Image (cartoon, rainbow, N blue to C red; front, side):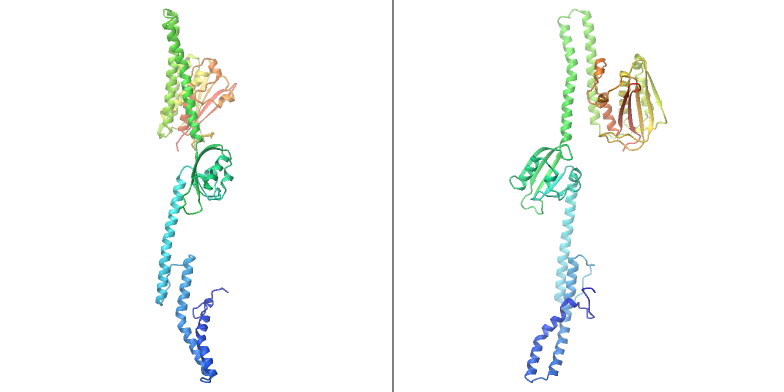
Length: 473
């Protein structure tokens, strides 16, 4: 049977109501025993009177005992959050006032708890929106809290782990230790995170002020600066390469100008030869600057909305017509093949025109004379994924440009889209180029969430395949 069992009178058996009645009636019992011993009352009379007093005490104590029991149960239900919201109906004034006071305190703490809970949820939500990982530590180095970025970066089970189990870099652990031992209020450092990640991390560690509450004693902010350092290196390399590429033709032009002003001043044949070379170098610089500006515009337009309805058949036909004379001069035939009906795609018409022209122009430039170049279009179910590429999902169109040129080695294939990269064989063949055409193509493809693949064989030639989604995200 249950521990709390109610009697017919409505009083729990464990309420000690009977004990209180007996204790309250005890003085009367002693008095009646004394009167009986003194022969002032008969035993029967004393017993009857004692029973009457017990009954009187029971009726006197019952209301307050019942209401105290009811009030105790109500307070317990509030404490255990099992109340149904019903306030007990009490008749005793003191019990009513006590119930009202308890209820007021309960409402106050409920309101306070709701406010604190809402504030805690709001604070957690704010921390989770921050893009950089944040960790909170207690005095022993245990992680007591983390934001969403930290959980994604380090793992969802990061909380309750020790900081030295997640980071093995001595310089970082030493800095954390200085903060936790009170030797420093703030530490900042850069270190390599090699465990699970190969990244360059900037860490800022702060000791929380003495008046802060809770277990947290320090806060760590982590910033992944790997990408920023990589971009900085790329920019530095880009400027160095651009300067180098421009310095060579400038030196050539400057040297011929000096020659024409001195030793070849009156030599008509030398003047014509030198001017022709200077024109070639000036054209190269002009093309290089145009490609640099084009690449810069593409990098700045990465957030531009793609909304043109692009007819790829029309684009390719325009490109073939524009390069027809160049192909004719090298005895090349450029042919377009449509394997199935090609729908219009969503993109930037000018950029797509540029990427197709760059690829076809390269095919003409590096093809063997008296061969054929094919531009094959077809719809495909999806775009092949590539390392570091955020390709669009769904149907796409592939544009495969094939030429019969020298086979490209695997080592060269991996570097074709690098800025200013040109194969040594092409340099030896004196084939002109800035080394930026495929870099520009890559930027356009990234903007369109597409992909570019290259295959090259001895007999099949080289095929550049552009994948562009029919619809953008």
